[in-house]
Image (tube, rainbow, N blue to C red; front, side, top):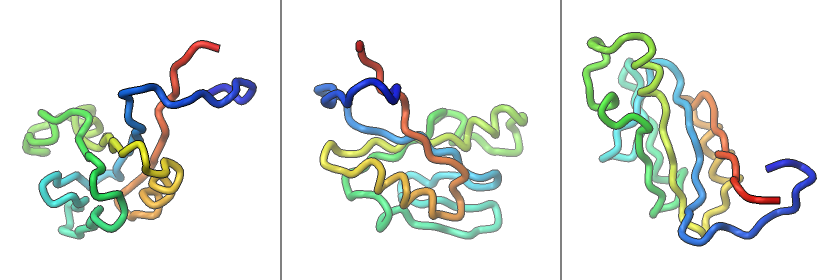
Amino acid sequence: MHPFQPDQPPIPGLKPSLRVLLREGWRLVGKSRSLVSDGGEKTSLKGVLPARAKITPTAPLLATTDRESLNEDERYLTRHVQVILTNEADLAECADALRELEGVEEVTVPPRIGLP
């Protein structure tokens, strides 16, 4: 949001979300809600995110494909994850908690779209 634009109320039906870029060599294992490195290191997201947060790869088809068969650009896309939070969750607190994880390179808040 532009710094001179006043805060707007949340848009009904739209849940807050975060865009997460994983470090190279890390991937999301959705069923166990964890990040796993190519070396086998595992970081659970269960204590980091609220229980009802939804974690999904941005490119789900690529995320389930064998990494060796993907080209460089496709491997980059597999590192992108979206975290959809509940309306009650503190967006900044969740973003800070994710930034502390070893497998996370970047966490950003998507832009809020609205009229001035």
